Image 1 (cartoon, rainbow, N blue to C red):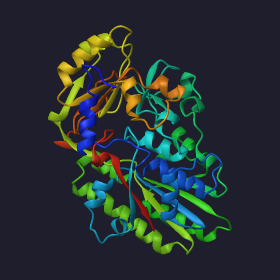
Image 2 (cartoon, rainbow, N blue to C red):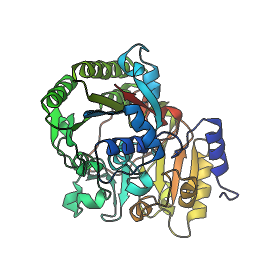
Image 3 (cartoon, one colour):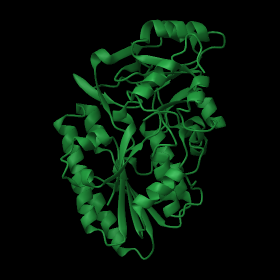
Length: 407
């Protein structure tokens, strides 16, 4: 698998030691949860997995399901909570999320029941050959200027190519999400075009779900997306009062909902990822004038923890030498063939769409380190200054382990 200049053996050693976690279909995971939920609600595109059957047994029979995505509330955040509070007391399993541990990647896996290798969304930022530019795929915009991809000639079906399971459930679906996300291309996709209900306060959302379930005359599945913990952790750090307060708010809301729901209803909560704090000294920066850019066809994409590059034909060796000279202390550099052999995007071959979106090389953080590409922007983006903030997208246990709560 690895050549004389390969980082694969070092990465495998990090997996062996537990310093990093390797995605695996043999460990309970987010794709298994999608399989369990899809089977429960009768989604015609659901794929049955042994792990999914086991998680379905933990959920048990029900007439109504409330599936909660608490963005950023990984197991590290759960362990920091009061052990007697609602969420820690109802953790039925610990799951591995998918890689990269980035929101659009994980939500696409949960919606489709497919690994990233198949659903084709490799990161937060994605190079799209259809527009010859990098997109912010969850916002459905070109990264440099936030121009809607539809205005550039793309159709959502070209960006999101594997259908959501929620297009075909036997149960009646509905989605509850912050008002700013209602009707967005990505939310519409992952929800299978089910009805969207926007909320301003989390209490309003859980109240609306309780009312819906109580009035229902048939089976229902209600999706609830909560961004609070992710936002607070990014802004102030995972151990901050802001992040801990956000987690406590989610805990109180779910405890209230569990008490308000009728018998026969179940809550299943998970997270897309956890986060890792980092300091300014952990950040490596590159920009369009960087010498590395002489060896690539276009600007890199991904997240700070996992950055993808498309090398010019014949320039691969020079790129690898220069990258390792500068970043070997914080990043593993993998070729696309090594990524495939390691099955980091999940088992099986890459789909044709994924093949087009992964580039030739990926830099994977060894821990808290980030690569910041200062891409050209039409407008300056002001950023708050923090001594330490948090990020995700990598393979550390804090990012990869998420809860499965059943109540």
